[in-house]
Each structure stands twice: as C-alpha cells, then as structure tokens.
Length: 195
Image (cartoon, rainbow, N blue to C red; front, side, top):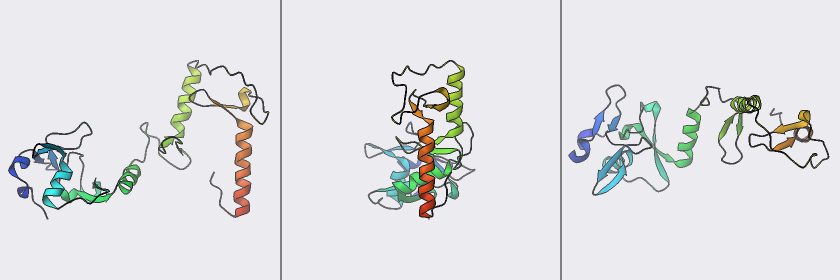
C-alpha cells in the first residue's frame, strides 16, 4: 500500500486528504476537475503523475479510472488506492453505467431511451417529446416544404407526419410499415420482439 509520505514534498504540499472519503485531493485542478500538478517544469494530471511516481508506468492505451466503489468521490483525487488501470473503452462504459437518469431526472430504461445516431449517446425519449410539445405550444413553425408526399406517395398530413426537432419530416405510415416488416422478419427468424 502506498503512503502520502512516499510522495516528494514538493508535490505532497499540494495534496489534502479528505477525512470523509480518504481521497487525496489536489489543490489545483484543470477545468475538467482533475487534479493538476507541476513536476519537472511540466503540468500533469495529478492522478497519473502520482501513479507513475508511486506505482509505476501506465501502459499504453490504459487510463486510470476513479472507482467510486473504492470510496473515490472526486476527480481531483490522486490516491492510487482509488484508481483502477483500465482501457478507455471500459472507463467510458463504467461512466455511462453510473448515469442512470437524464439531467431532468427521467430514468434511462429500454423504453425511455434511444441511442443518438450521430454520437451514439443516450437520448431521453420523455425529454425529447417534451421539447417537441413545448416548441409546438410556443408556435414553433415547421419550415415550409415544397414536397407534399413521401417517396412512397403518402401525403404529408398532420396525422401522417412526424416532425423532428430540426423541422425535418418523416412519414408515419412508412415508419409503421418498416416496424411491421422488422417484426415479421424477427418472428420468422425466431428472435424475440424488442418493442
């Protein structure tokens, strides 16, 4: 087990031990909240520098995860006992699993979550629906379209039109037909329904 006394004095003077959680908190931080230490004329992330000095080198493609299960409550923490060397992929997966609710407090469930196509992040369907309702209530005007029918020749009527947040349109009949075709294909292949 490593000790704070093992750290060089020039670095140790910038670390305070949090009495509640045991985190070794750095007094200087980056904008991201991670601890910052200056060593040999360079700025370093504190948890990485302390790991290198007290534990050893960090292998390539490995990052240090602050593990809450070990008591870590702060990004400014640099105590190696609170760290776990993992791949970036595992670190991101752990961070996403820790977030169980959207910023508005809705639980991320299979029924209430969709994956954004652009970045792959989670989108709360309840919040998305609330944004659309608020825009409609505020008199948000959908951009004028010259095209009156979808490629399958269904007319864009209020009942048959799904309006996206950016004003784009999609055909409700086509979307329902695609869902039905997918359900039929899944049934033929013996896959369970996902909706």
